[in-house]
Image (cartoon, rainbow, N blue to C red):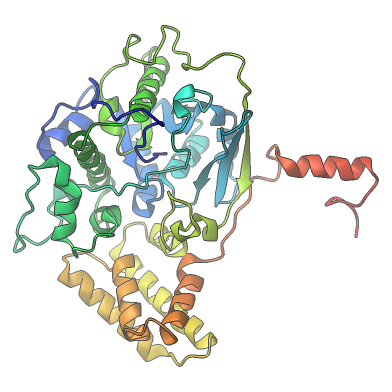
Length: 459
């Protein structure tokens, strides 16, 4: 999974590195370099992306790799079979705690709409080995670096999927943004949309435009997302040293797993994909000849576990910086699997449930309101040239129809109703036979030793 580019304390950002795509490139040149002959099969992802997660099994079936590499730290390797186990119910999280002060904890949450989880499940069904290819947490490069699970920096493709190729994100009647200034890519793309500074570019340019598109078109749009983000990072001062270090490690793991000619597929953050198109170099900075992580010996290890998680924690408003807004809505998008008709049904379902929740809070709301929400959201999608209404259109329609511009009183009740329906209360658990670690087993062992009742006690 991808993490936001952030450099360790005291280390300035560095250059993009010799393994990045040559710049500047046009979008067509970039996608050719990322998907052309001799390039590993790359699926560039955002950590939680329902449309892409729905497409991952089809993409991997067509690629038919001999080995799958997933962007997770090497310490998580032993948990991958349990993560993909048929009895593991998402949401769950891989957790790690360091053995020294200031070295943790780290969480890597997964939902059904996480592309990485979709890939690991595919590999488990097909019997394809999975390799955790990211830099080990024990490496000293992580000191001072961010340990959260995915990018807080918004990603932005310059094009969006249609059927088998990418197409402009907005009607041609709108002026094209100037993308020649790589340092202002996200600003130009936001100006082409609503103009709001907090616009979720992935949601607007990939997820909202995905319905009706083929899996390969979606893969290409996601890869262009990473290319555009990386172009902006390079123009703004360079890719942080931590990310360069991680990418060097990923290249070394790719080289090791394909040394015997095996076909590999990689599911990595879209930001990192451009750095993985060239072969590894044993002499590159931070890499010794053995491929071992650059860290002092004798350091305490990391304790890892697979733990239950909830949609409430997964929502970015819980404080999780790599989260996604409204997980229950994202789950509905996953189930729609890119079908515009199914998405319209999901929109209707969500509108009816929000109205029912608001009514349960003591405010009048009925079928007429639900119909108006669906109509307004659909009209907004058509005005924006989208194949179906997405989360943004739904939220705007609910605010207009139910809150009626009132931030307090009824507006707060509408916000509570939306939280109940769109965030949800779904929780997960690891497979029953999965190993357990952490505090709970220690407490249960102590209860047993003292002869006190515990979870396994009768009554």
